[in-house]
Length: 115
Image 1 (cartoon, rainbow, N blue to C red):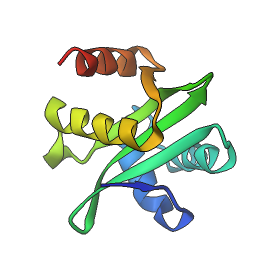
Image 2: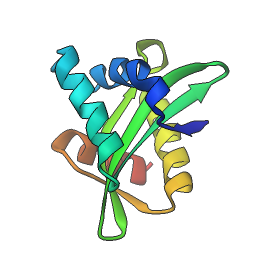
Image 3: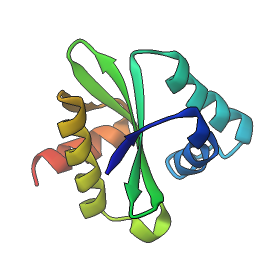
Image 4: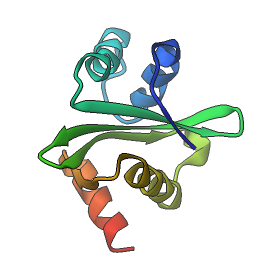
């Protein structure tokens, strides 16, 4: 289940975003999460399974579609199938077409769309 990011989940969001980027510096991760908080055109969701947050997905809203900026799953839940489930849930929730924003997210989105 996707849950819209809230400030009380800041540390969890930082930890999950760390799985999606090479920079692990806490200051950088905090700034990344705060960008989602402050920019109304960016949306961040946590993926909850049972009682645990196991994934995160973040978008930039642009001209009627959503550009995927971040997607990450806890290591024990990784795999294309879980990423696809996360993308399916996000597309239903935001009701917009999802496109890739980076080279990496573009590849994932294209594979997801052709599955």
